Image (cartoon, rainbow over all chains, first blue to last red; front, side):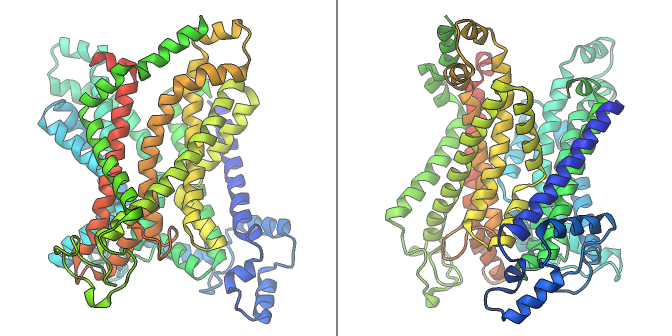
Length: 315
Length: 292
C-alpha cells in the first residue's frame, strides 16, 4: 500500500507542477507582453513600462515562474492589480460564499440521489423507476445556468419568496445567508443528482443480483432487511467514487452558478478578473482550481484502493 | 482466417438486422427525431429564417409570442425563433469541430497507446491525466484571459478535453481487442502493428467511438452554451443559445418568457443526442442485443 501511495503522490505532484507550467505559459508567455494584455493597446507607454517594472517583467520568464512558485510555497499569490490587495485575501473572502455553495450542493445531491436511486432500484421496471430515470435523463440535459434562471423566475419573480441573486453576507444572521444560497444550491445539485441517481440505481440492482444476497434471502431475510443489511453496504462504493469525482464538477460548477445568481464567490472573482484583465488573480485562481481537481482525484484513488485491494495491484 | 473472424465481429454491428433493431428501439428513435429536427432547423436557417436573426427593430422589442413572431421578440426587437434557428448553427459547428478533433486525434492516440503499450502508453496516459486537471471551463478561462474572448476558445477548450476523453476510451477498448485470439492469428500471419490496428482493431472498436462521439456532442452543446452564457464563448453578433440566455436574464422581471426558448432548444438537442447515444450503445453491444 505504501508503494502505491508514494507512486500516486508523486504523480499528483508532477501533474500539479505541469499544470502550473501550463497556466504560466498560457497567461504570461505565449500571448506576449502581460503588461500590454492587462492595460490594453491604447495605454500610454509610460504606464505600460511602470506596470512592467511592478510585475518584474524585465526578468526572464523562467525567473518569474520560479518566483511565483516560491511565493506559493510561502502562501503568497501576489497583489491583485485591480483591487490592490493580496490575491490570497481576495480568495479567502470569496470562499465564504463558494464553500457553503459547493458543500450544500453536494449534501443535497447525495441525499436526493440516494433516496431516488434506491427507490428506483427497489421499484425496478415499474412506474416509479421510469419516473426517476426520466427525471435523471432530463436532469442531464438541462443546462444548470438555465435551471437557475427558471428557479429565479418561479421563486423570485412570480412567488417573491426568495431573492433573485446577490449575497448579504453572514453578518446579518445565518438565515439571510442561507436564504440567498438556497436557489444556487438547488441549481448546482440538479445535474449532480441526475448522475448519482443513475449510478446508485444501477449499483443497487447489480449487487442485488449477487449470490450472497440470494443466500441472505434464502436464509429468510425479508427483502427490506437484505437491502439494508447486505445490498447497500456494497452498492454504495461506486456511488462514493462517483461522488468523489463529482467534487471536481461541483468546484467548476460554482464558477457558472455564482454568475447566474451574482454571488460574490471565487467564480465571480475570476470572471471579473477576466474583464478587468487582472492576470494575477486569474493565474492563481485557475491553478488553485486545477490543484483541487487533481487533489480530489488523488484522494478518490487512495480511498478506492483502500476499499478494493485489487486496484493496487493493477496500477 | 483472421480477416474472416474480424469480419464476423464487425458484422454484428453493420448487418441489416441493425437497422431493423434500430427502428424498433424507442429511445433511439426519439433521439434521432430530436437530433434530426435540430439539424434540419440549422440547415434551413442557412437559406431561410422567418425574420432576420440579427435585424434590430426597437419598436418591436419584447413582444409576446404572436402569429408574426411565434416565439416573440427580444430586447432589440429581434425575432427569437429566427435567432434560435441560427443559434443551432453555432451549437452544431462548435460540437462538430470539437468532437471531430477529439475523435480523430484522441482515437489515434488511444490506438497508438494500445498497440505500443510501454512508455508510449505511459506518456499518453500521463498527458491525459494532466488534461483532467483542466476542466473545459478552466481552459476557456485561460485562453480568454490570454487572448481575449472568442468562439475559437470554446472550440479549442472542448477539443482538448475530447482528445483525452477519446484517447482513454479507445485505449481501453483497443487493449481489450488486442487480447483477442483473431489478433494473435493476424500477428502469426506476419502482420505488423499498424496493419493490425487499421484492419482489425479500428473496425472492431469503431462503435465505441461512434457512441462516445454522440454523447460528447451533447456535452459540447451544453458546454458551448455555458461558455457563451459566461461571455467566454461565442461573441455578438453570432447567434448563440447561451448568450441569448445571458441577455434574457436582465429582462426576466419584464418578460420572463424570453428566457424559456433558448433553454428549451438546448434541452431538446441534448436530450435527443443523449437518447440517441444510449440507444446506440444498446444496439451495438451484442451482449445486450442478444438479451433483447
